[in-house]
Length: 459
Image (cartoon, rainbow, N blue to C red; front, side, top):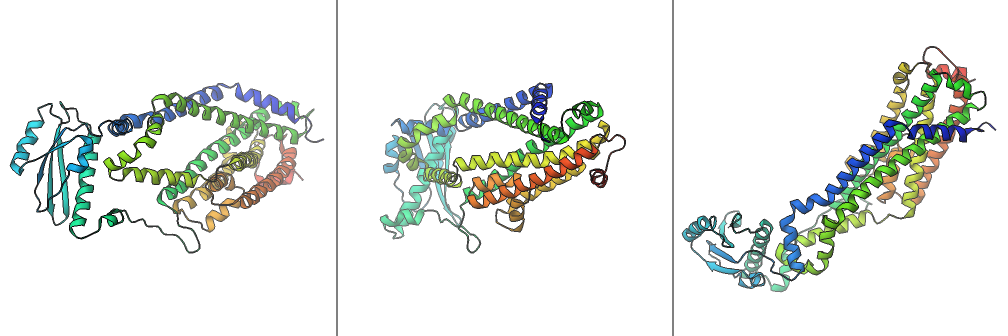
């Protein structure tokens, strides 16, 4: 059999690669970076959103929502607003003051420990305005509480003003609700803002990650073959192993090396996330949401509904996740690597000196970059177009776009399987060409061969 001995080549190439300092150090460094990024992604929001988290935690525990005891209110409009009912749950005492008294009180609370705020309500051509000053230093009032307090005042002003205009109390919720808008091409379902963002970001990140792994390790196949050829090791291998077995063993070995490194880096991210869980944003928000949802919604004037919309959008975007998604991702990665690694093998076999390798892999670089941009640019528009359709099915770009498209539900399982089948067929064709050409040029020494010269020698 022409592939007899590929296991020995695979074992040797795999072992040799994972023992190199570049692999060991590179994997450790990148895994540490990913672990730190995962840790910070869960931990930093706790620092930057400490006031808001304290407010939610107090609400969840049934404690006072606000760290404010007194509000000095200067209403400089012609409308009377009653805030006592909405602030009583927070144990805030409202004291009416004049504009001059408000100015004096603002200066006073800056140097005292009184947990007080001074609020002015004004009206001009642009509408109502609420301006609140608080004692942030000695009184230690949380900024998030002041923001929530302003939200409550704003919400109350809107409601009571609408009621003065004759709007029924039963209609207030609808009158104050946001008007959602969406647009889409005729014949397509409208997509929400969150899903639009995910439809853009996820494919971009996926394309970049897959491109880096597939392309960088494909180049390592070319480098490995070029090194063995220049050191004449290949001549010893050919005495007992067929050329096809050599190229197949090396390609599969590099494929497994890249998967191993990818898994180790991913585990680094998981470890970083797990370490951050006891004091990260996930552990703090999770237990609070159920018990505090109603109180936070009142205090934050609909902010929680926005969070629900974001969570709902993310859930909807990834609602297609199941076992088939991970199978398609894995198979596409393997097939994409085999495609580019086969071309890289030709590049490595075409040179006799290592200094010629950089110019030999230029065609591979051009093909890889072209495939990447074919997969990347359609995501900018966020709409289905001819370029996205072409990129999904041609072998040079499908490895970079197919996993994210299927993950986000842009294509169904049948379309994904068709794209995988086309990529697999392209792999078979490229491997047949590589085996034929490789056998004819592997012992060539001298100047770098052009592709036309390799074809002639392989006949």
